[in-house]
Image 1: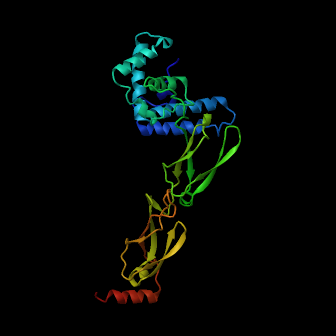
Image 2: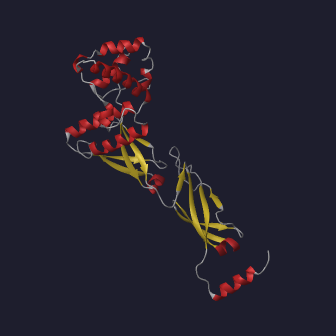
Image 3: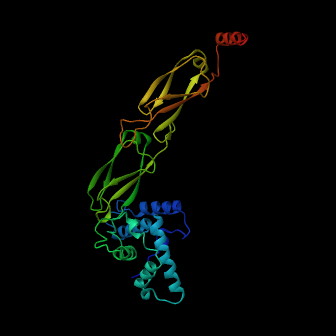
Length: 304
C-alpha cells in the first residue's frame, strides 16, 4: 500500500494553517467537482482524493494521528526503506504501546464512519478502530463532501432553492432555509459521491444596504436637516421594502433607532427575527431658495 501525502494533494505546506487548508480545498473542490466535470472519471477520483485529504487535515485529531504516521514514514524512507516495505502493523503497535491511539474512536464521533475512502485511509484510521474491538468500522457513510454555494442577501433572508446536477445527469432541488449566513452548512443526505452526504457551504453575497451581526441588521437612512430639527418621517430600507420611521423633533445626526423584529430570521424558527438598527445621516441641502436662506439666517440670530 502506498503512502498518501495529503498535504501534497491539497498543495499546502505541512505547517499550513486551518484557513490555508480550507482555502486550498475549496479551490480544488470547485475545479474537480463532478457537476463541473460530468462523466469524467479522473476528475471524480481526484475530487474524492481532495475530500479525503481535507477530512483528515481539517480535523485536529485526525491530522495529529496522520502527522505521526508521516514522521515515521519519512524517517523510514530517509534510512533507505522502500515504500512497499513499510511495516504498517509495527507502526500501529508502537502507537498503541505509546498510548497515542486512545482517542481515535472520537475522531468519528463514536460511529467509525469511513465509507467511500481509500484503503490508505481505512488502514490508518480503520485499523485503529478495529484494534479497539469495533466489529464493523465502515458501517456508515463518509463524513461528507462540501460544495460552496453563493446566494444573495435577499435569498438568505427569504430562503431559496438550488438545483444540483448529479453525476448521472439527473437533478435534485435543494432547499436553503431562511436565515443562513456565510459559513452555514446545509446537509443534503446521500447526494455526494459514493452516496455520502453532501454539505452545501453557504456564502452570502454582501449587500450595500445592510450590515449583519448574527440575526441583527444595521442600515443607514439619509434625513434632511429640517426633518431632524422639526420632526417628521423618514423612509427606511428593510429586507421586505421601505417603511416610514417617525423622527422626533430635535433628533441628532448619527442617532440610532431600533426597529424590533425587522432583522434576519433565525434558521431554527424563521418567524423569530432579529432587530434592524437605523443610523440617521444628516443631508444638508446644497442649494437654498432666497426665502429659505432668509428664514435660516433669521433663525441663526435667535439665541437658544
